[in-house]
Image (cartoon, rainbow, N blue to C red; front, top):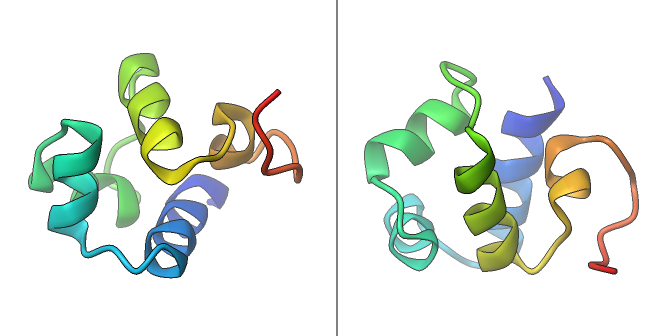
Length: 71
């Protein structure tokens, strides 16, 4: 499970709580918890907002590449 681990790692590196990430990405705290615990995968719009809030590409966040930068 790459996505849940990467999401948590990036959130912690950014110094954000789950609540702060939820607010920054415009998502609910419940959804952030589901994503981090691997209970649910994000739909495209959530992935976009999470990647934007964490300043990484969607491909990196979802584990499709090891490059963090946004093209």
